[in-house]
Every structure is written in C-alpha cells, then in structure tokens.
Image (cartoon, rainbow, N blue to C red; front, top):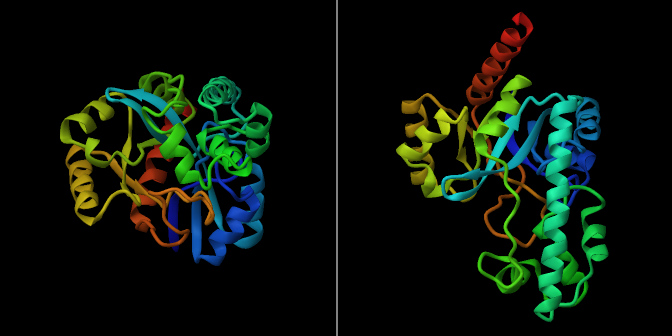
Length: 283
C-alpha cells in the first residue's frame, strides 16, 4: 500500500496547489495514497482522482467539516465520500454560503480597523471555491497591509483579534449522521489536549468513528496518548500532514511526505466503510 497521508488540502479550499498538482507533489514526495480533505467541498476530487489514476497515486475522497463541539469549533474529517450525492452536496453548498457570509463580515471589520481590503480581493484568492481566513490573509498580504500571513492572523484574524468572526457551525451529530448515511467514516482532527478520555467518549457517542493521532501539532508523547485512548475506546486512529502547500506561512503543518500513517490504519477505515456500504445495500 505504500506511504499514506490522510489529511491534505488543495485550492478547492485554502491550499495553494490545484488538485492535480497536489497529486503530482504527493507522488514526488513518495506517497502512494492521499486523502484530499478540503474544507466544506468535494470540488477538487474529480481532478485529483483523475491525476492519481494516471500517476499511480490513490486519492481517497475526503472532506474536512467544521462542526460545533462542547468547546466550540471542531474539525471533522470524513473519508470515502460519494462525490455525486445530492444530499451531501446540498449540505456542503450551504456551508460554503456560510463561509462567504463570514468573509463579508471579516472584510467589514478589517476596514473598520483600518486594514483596507475588498471582498473581491478575498474571493480572487479563493478562486471561487470554499473561502476561509487564509484567503483573507493572503489578500491582506497582496494588498500590502501586512508583510505575511502569520502577521495577518496575529494582528487581525486570530481569536480575539479585531476582525475575528466565528463560523456558522452545524451540530456535530448532524454531520456524523449525514456522513454515515452515505457510508463514509469520520475522524476528529487535531484535537491536541482536548483528546481526553471523557471528550473522546462523548465524540464517539455523537457518532465519530476515529481520532487524528499523527498531526504536526501532536508531538510523540501526545500522539501515543491519543492512540492509546483511541484503542481503549474503540475509535480508529488516523493522521496526516494537514499540508496546504509549501508557501503557506502558517504554523502547525508539515511538509508533504514527512508524516505518514501505518497501512493497517487505512485498512481499518476501509473495513468500516465497506461494512457500512453493505448495510446500506441490505436496507
């Protein structure tokens, strides 16, 4: 099965490389399997899968949902999603509409804080796809307001900064039910120290199947702790680089190919997916 990365992004959301180029870069980095997990969209998957078939790189259809958790926002990875499902695509379209509304409010706050930027400039950065704060940050950089993306977040866009606007978040249980309905599998992303026994148990009860163990924000001690808890609670381990592109000047991400997961982790995800598909076909 080779080297596996289950958390990668493209320009379909806030990554810097188009989907086909992501696959090319994955192959160059020695990866044989990636999950393209763009935020609130499946738009990049067709091109990525096509490029993967040409290059011998398996592309798993994934997505990274933003959901409401006990502590606020949580990111939920989903794997083996059916790209053509009408219900799923309608839900994701609604989430992207919410992202645009948020971008409009962020732009208003930025201009009110003396950081001149237009919504059009932000949307150009997002290329018409799922818009997020990194696109706003890049627009600020390109407009000469800040020297780099990191400064944009520290000065304006981060938590408690003048242009921070919270997302419109769906309930976790709504998303896990939606994902299970199409036979897919979920994993809570980059929980850091929120991955306590009690919080993982609540996530499992809410329908979450796994938890991200390997991630750039998880050092070896933290990763081992989360993996142990996942095993004890019957949750599947996942992991990846959370790669958005080499030029993204943001912390907590790793170079493509630098962080992989064992083959048995993907096998376990596949087995649960196949089990769910069989159950759906039997009903």
